[in-house]
Image (cartoon, rainbow, N blue to C red; front, side):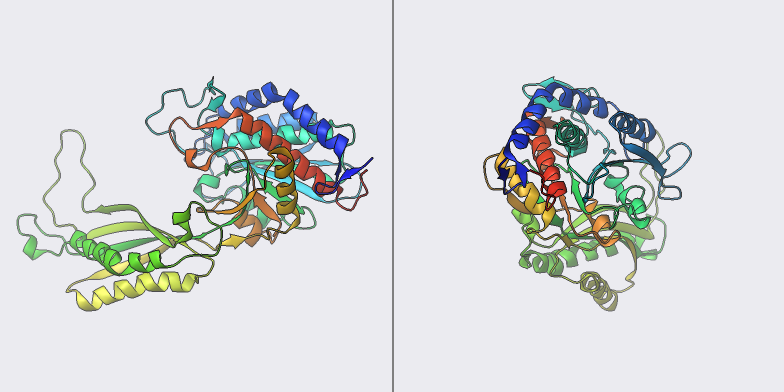
Length: 439
């Protein structure tokens, strides 16, 4: 039997797997709808346990050994909102690598603007609507159906298949992949290759992401009566000076920097800084009460700095601190505090590595065109697999249009669900059989 050299799979097996997934189209839609109906909103972390158990029970019926791991002590974990992860493993008993599909089960708040129930899984015009359809329960469902079709092909591959449903990716991943990676769940020799079905379009292979530094800047003033502001020192005005200096000095520098990483969209190939939130003075009043007249003695701003692999984190932090120090020298009464909140280094997998090349070959076979290798503008759980698990052969690939993530009326194209399941099945089969003489 002649093998498909790109995929390292027999051509009849490739065709059989693709036909099997086509026949499971309705099942794939139903599985995605079932997952969407768990309102796993983070924060606070609702419905994690029932969603994890739903995934585990399905895979257990297919011969997977299933474990549930609670990330005790991580941010947000409590008796009311336990951080429950599910990891399912199926060992063929034959020598071979381990291919792991990792998807996060948490979703963001629904927000306003929906025209359908965000947790009902409405199907209309070839689209499946709902919070998480795109990011990323459609990807989880596609990976499950992909693995099941591969196992049912009549020529089950050697090695090990794993699927995990993890939590808290939307809030940094510390109760999910980070916790598991610290404990060896994403390290050799247990795992060799990881595919994360994030929504980055079905003809793209995502090999990394930019870095991120979140920090809180606080300017300090002196409280006084609002009718006599000259007796106080307004922290909000000091923060305005920070914003003005950002506009004058920092933003032009960031716009001038550009990475060689293939980040999409093109604007994200530059360094960026977002003002995530700002608050000064008394808390906003609601109802019938009125605020008291006070000069604000504190103003806090959270910044979200996305940085490039060509940059250095110490330098990224240093240019903000230097700007603040310059204001302290130049502006009467200016005092500030700077607090780190969150930081992640950029990561970049080898586009010629096993998992990237196998996925690219599968895209060419299923989609019929060469894939685009990209990097994500924001971070995802590859950061923990790379930096904590020390596992470099990790990429993101899955159904969904990146721009729809976190939007009202989020949806995934049903055709993309099917296509991505085929790609994931063929990529996994190719990785498992590489060098195994699977003819």
